[in-house]
Amino acid sequence: MTDIVLATVNAKYIHTAFGLRYLLANMGELRARTSLIEFTIQQRPIDIVEALLAQHPKIVGIGVYIWNTTLTRAVVALLKSVAPEVTVVLGGPEVSHEIEEQAWLASADFVITGEGDLAFRELCQRLETGKRPLQRVLDGGLPDLAQLELPYALYDDHDVAHRIAYVEASRGCPYRCEFCLSALDKSVRAFPLEKLLVAFDDLLARNVRHFKFVDRTFNLDLERSVAILEYFLARLLPGLFLHFELVPDRLPAALREPISRFPPGVLQFEVGVQSLDHEVGRRIRRRQDLGRTFENLRFLREEAGVHLHTDLIVGLPGEGIASFGNGLDRLVASGVQEVQVGVLKRLRGTPISRHTDEFSMVYDPLAPYEILKNADISFADMQRMKRFALVWDTYSNQGNFQGSMRALWGSDSPFERTLAFSDWLFTQAGRVHGISLHNRARYLFSYLVRERSMDAGLANASLIRDYADAGRNKPSDFELVSFEKAATTVQRKTIPARQSRHL
Image (tube, rainbow, N blue to C red; front, side, top):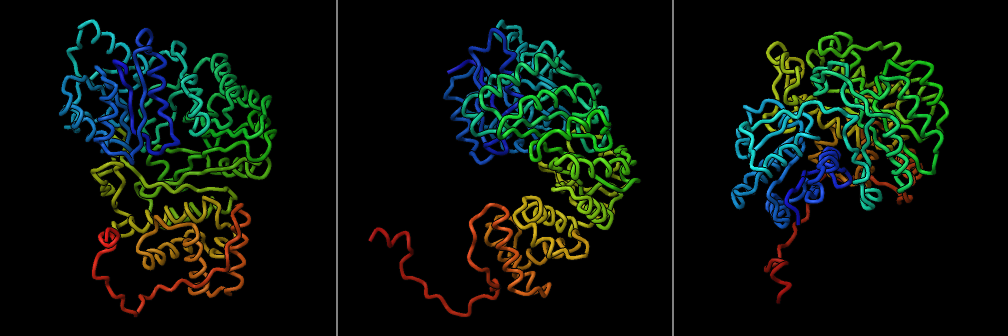
């Protein structure tokens, strides 16, 4: 039991509350009296409140993000109802902007905007001494990164074995892409490199092998990027996997050289292309040299063995379905392993809202605030594109059906062929989510045979080969899925099954 509890709701169990670990690491003399509890969005608000109050806290700090804002709202309402004496402090991206438009925030005692690494401790210290701030909304400011205690020792043995280890070498982004919260950053700041590498030494010694860097622009500072890559090159332990986010058109020779020395499969680069339409990119201030971008992608794919995770966004102002599809086809042709299709979200505080009137942008008022329609894509077509994004991810990105998806595409447009399959799947299954792997294979088999006139034997062989290539157990032969309703009449039992078990 502790006086101060830090809590948040993660989107998945494997995620770790990186920001809250910074807060805990920097609690100073209050650290021994502070605990951290993580929940997931599958849990009920009432159960979360019960777990929080079991600690008998005086102060509860909650991290609020786009994926947990609805659940957190319910948690705060319950918490203040049953324990109004507990001081509730909210922080995080979701409550750092447009505060006046979020009436539910009035339930909290304090809101810390921006980076709260030090501001939360300072608030707790003031409350301890009875110097309660007059303002409810406190600015976390931009703390000196050199003065922060790093949080990596707070990854415990369970985290190391079962969760993602997030790390960062810098904060901020110099670019002003209007859909991103980083467009509001005033500067790019770096953590002291020597101190950071010492922390990485400790993580490696504790058997951490997957490092996910959350830096927005890892390759911005060439000297630091090379130093970090060289550090890991000198420590190529079995199972090492490194994830970085890169600016796609910035890859000079000095950076290519260490990249090319990593064995295939160790590096994954997340490359935010977002749109390949020059005018759309200019409109949202996403400027990039596309010629250089594609040359860099070619180098990374063919000469360096890097796993490339590229991003495209559906719904950007002025980009229709045809333009988006052309961009996706170009990325597929470049040989990248994954094209992550995201749907535009109007994150609180981002400048993308300035295009709302001109392009008739309509967003869902509920989190995650996805676009519903705009001047170029109707609501019905936006729904089709959202289903396409999920089908593309489950069938193409996840690598389970590589050969069979190429058979589906043939020499035609991967986008158009996959969109047609997505539409068909929705009509047959009534959904595109929550379908088991084997049933996804059966649907694809049926589509290839029925709609694409592929020989059943060849389609069957292709899917079985895909299973083998993905390291899965070889299934039995696939068969055509019957979508017609059974004509037989099922006789209902006189007594329901649940009650009959007690007879």
